[in-house]
Length: 304
Image: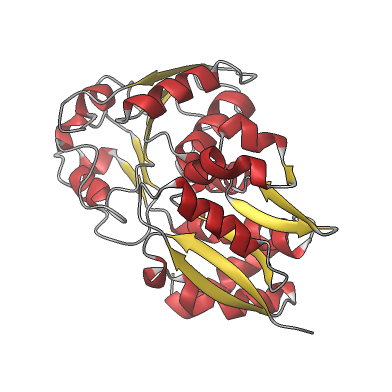
């Protein structure tokens, strides 16, 4: 069996825990892949993403997981793919690249992986569904969270997506109007010139889900919330990051009501994301047993 490259595209990929566990995960799926790291800076132009798609067409490439650039890859290069899953248009992102019968295909892994991690977080907090959700950041991961709550969920009253970039905000506001929603979704800007979202978070109902999907605290320093007192009582505070400074969670820990908050990092989302995408690339039907095996392997390496 010829070794193929699995391309991991991000911003600081060498710092990812996947570099230490990838071979073990390949063994679970019985595939012979070599991890190739590709870093692309935030804001790269269309030429760079077009070149990336050309690289992914190579016969030596099994497939790819995209982080940080899922939305940009769709916006710049969706027409270069032979086939895109319908969810790519619903979320305007491409997070997984794979082959089927010689065709280069793009898909969305975040809907399933985010949903798996979210269900566990809400179950742990013994909350069937929060009354409200505030999602900070309208990139691919943020929209996947909103989709799980507003389209696949049943009892959440409202989802608020906060996005600092005006052009992205307008695009997403139009996009969510096309979703088959079960809950209302609003898209708003940040509440200060510095890009913070304290006022929006502060106005959320007690017990709400507050999500950092901005990448701040991993690829970029800082937190989208500065004032620890902004978090509503009994909030479920979820940072999609599992590595980096995790400033968002550090701010939450500074509140005098820390004991009232339920804090979660992105480790379970990380493992679920890789399980979903690697299974897709390998052409394996999804099974929760794969996720269990991935997590057990990661626990042995990282003592999580």
